[in-house]
Length: 153
Figure (tube, one colour):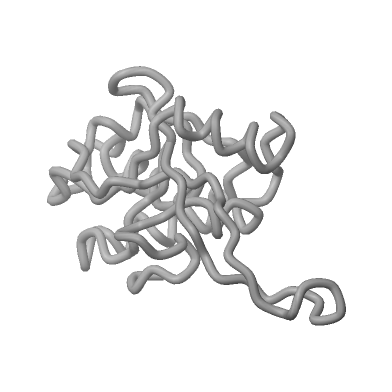
C-alpha cells in the first residue's frame, strides 16, 4: 500500500481553491501469467457467454489483443478478477476445446496484493468494497498513473 499526494480543486470560498491531498493507493504490477492461471481466477460477476465466445474466436485469430486483466492476488497463484472477466473466460474456452489450437501460452495481468486491496478499501470505502470498478480507478496506480488513464485502456 502506498501513499501519494495529488493536487485537488476545492471550493474557493472555503480554502482558496487549491490544495494537496494525501491519498492511499495500491500499485499494480504488470506480469505475464501462464494460460493455465485462468483456472485460478474467480469472477466477481456473471459473464455473458456469447461475448466470451466472441472474444475466444478473436483470440484464435489474433492472439491476446486486449489490455491486461486486473487481478487481486488473494493467495499465492490464486486471483480474484476486478477487470477482464470476459477475456479470462474467452481464454478458458479456448483452452477447454480439444479441437482448438492453443497459441496463447501466457497473458498480461496487472496484479494487486490482497493486503493492498484491503488497505485501499479500508481507507476509502470504510471497509466495504465498492461494486463498480470505476470507484477504484483513482486509487489503483499503473506506472504512477490512475488505472482509468492507462495507455492500453
